[in-house]
Length: 593
Image 1 (cartoon, rainbow, N blue to C red):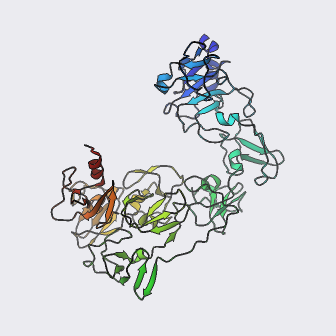
Image 2: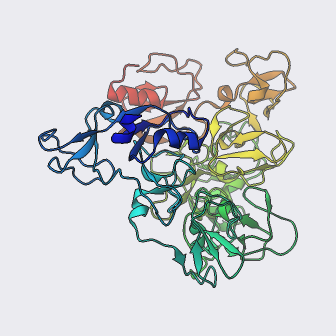
Image 3: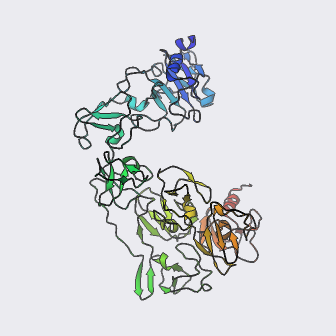
C-alpha cells in the first residue's frame, strides 16, 4: 500500500471486487489524489465502484519529456515540463496510441468541503468517451470529466464545478418562496415530476412542503407534443379522480404536477413523459399565438365527378366500382398499390390514377409521430425518400415537415395509421410505446424497432413496416384476393407457392383459403413495394427507369449476372438492367462483393 500512500494512482474501471463501498474507500483512497479512467463497456452499473487494477502516475519535471507537448487530460490547459505534471505511461496505449495522458498536480487533487457535497471528498473521474451510466447531478447531462464520490455515487461534471455556486433559487413563476439546495443525499418526491430520482440536485422551500429537482424548476409551461392534437399546459395538481397518462398509460398521482390539454380534453400526461425528446420538440409555447389548423381540400371540383387534383396538371374523372381486369396494370400514384377494385379518379388525358380515398388525402395533417404539422407532397422530382416510420424506400406521395432543419417524412400509408390502432390480425388495441425511445422486437418481422405499436394487454408488437401491409391484395395467379394473416401458435408445415420454401404463419403470410395458396410477404410484394413502376429516379448521378419484373423471361442483372427475382428492376438510359439499388451502387464504386 506504500505506492498508493505516496503517489497518485490510476484505477481502471472494471467489475467491482469489494464487498461494500467503505471497504473500497478504506483500501484505495486514504488521503491520496486519485484519477479513475473509465472505458466504454467496462462500467455497466452506475452504482458500481472501480476494481483493484491500479497503475502509478509518474512525476515529470524539467528535462523529462520536454519534447512532448500535450494538454492536461482534465482541464485541457497545456502542461508545462518546467513546473512538472503527472504522466500515466501505462495508459497511453489503452486510451490512444498517439495521445499521452497527463495531469496538472492541482487538477487531480481531491475536492473537499464542496457545498454541493460537503460530506465526502470528490475524486477525479475521467471517461474516454461519454458513458450512458454517468450523468452530472447538476446539469443532468452525460459528460466525460467528473468530480465523483465513490461512497454515495454523487457526481458533478468539470464544467458545473467551475461555475458559481447556486445554493438558492428565486423563481416566482414556479414557486412563490425562495428555494434552498439540500446537500444531503435524500430520496424525496419532486412536486413537479412526481419522481424521487436522487441523481439530480434537490431544492426545497423552508416555508412550505415543496420539493423540486433543479431541472424541473425550469420545465416548460405550454408545449405541443406529437401524441395529442392540442397544446398542453402545466398544472401543479389534478382534480380528484382517476387520471392516466396519455403517453405511458400509467396512473397519474393527482397530488403532483403534470400536463393537461388547454382545450379541456381529458388528455393528461406525466411531466417527464410529456417533455421526452421523442414526443416534444423542445419549444416553450407560452405567450406564442396558437396556429389555426385549417382543413385544405386537395382538389378543385370542376363538375360532377370531375376534379383538378393539386398533384396533377390534367382533369380527372371519377370511375365507380372499377372492373378487376380494366386497371390491373395501373398503380395509384399516392399509395403505390395496384388498382384492382373500388372507386378511382382516372386522368382524362394520361395514365395518372388515384384511389378515391387517396384523392381525398388532406393537404395538411397532424400525426401522432411528430409534433409539427405535416404537408402532403407529390414525389415528382425523380428522387426517392426514406419514410421516417417504416424506413422503406418510396417514390409515392408523402407528408413532410416544413419546419426549418426538420427532415421528418412520412409515406402516406404510414401517415394513415391512427392510434389506438384496431388491426384485424390482433384482437386488442395497439398503442405507441409506453416508453418513448425504447426498443422492442416486432412480432411479425422479428426486427428491433423504436417506432412501433404495442398491445396494451399482451406482448404483441407491431412495427410500422408490418402495420401498413395491406390486409387484402390481388395476386395475378389467383382469382381471389389474398388475405394477410398472423398466427402466433401454428402447427404443421406450410410452403410458399412462389419460392417453394417453408413459410411460418407466425411471421405473417398471405393466404387464399379457397385455393389453398400461401405466400411469403416478400414473395407477394417484393422488397420495394412502395416504388412506383414506370417512373424514373436519379440514383448515384444516373437516371434509371423503374420497370415491373413480370415478363415470362426474367431480366438479368449486369452487375451480379443473376436473374432478377424482385418485383421491380432498374433500367439505365443505355438499356442496361440492374436488379437492385445495391447493385447500382456496387457497380458505380467498383465494389466486388
